[in-house]
Length: 258
Ligand SMILES: O=C1C[C@@](O)(C(=O)O)C[C@@H](O)[C@@H]1O
Image: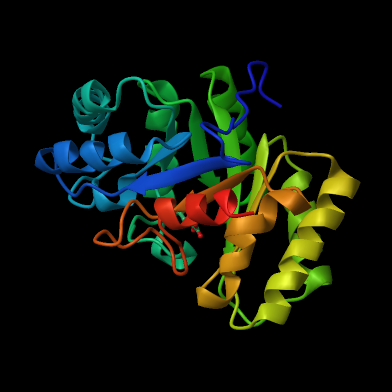
């Protein structure tokens, strides 16, 4: 684990840390997103870089300089908010079209110039040696890491999901994240059970969620089973960053009614 591990901490009366994703596609869009963040008062702001960087090639020699400029400007808007940096590839449910080489190059640049970010999302799709090297680089940069796996496939069930968390847990990642697409409530319960078992067995920080409308209960109650972070959409006008996200206000209304 990172020497300076940064834990996700709930704010206000939330029972678990609440993250919102911002998805600006250009620098001009920042003020609108930040206004939404300010009214939502989340614990964590995830900046989804896959919406922002599409026209830039991280393999270009000028990229590190360009990123420093972008990062510097962005942090003037984001200053004060705890930031999670994520580039989500298409294969893992995002917009990002970078190939593996480009993804690696981007992650290396983010580790070199993390700006004001606290956490870095790394997709668990890389060969183990690359993944381990990136985790070390991120830790050296003082970033707390979240190793993510998104599952959209038919393989499901407590055993499959627990096994996937075990694979993530075999690394030095600080947080292990598993997001699975479900289409019924029974699968959501299985994800929650896999989370509980993984927590007992691995004793590691976890982030899990069942995506899709049938999975919403996992976003509300996942913390009771050992998930340490949950994601919500900023408002009904902005679609969230994954299927099934509830709005921040719907999440808080539910928690307050309990
Ligand atoms: O990995 C995750 C979780 C997520 O996919 C969700 O289901 O809430 C939303 C993404 O923005 C984030 O990077």
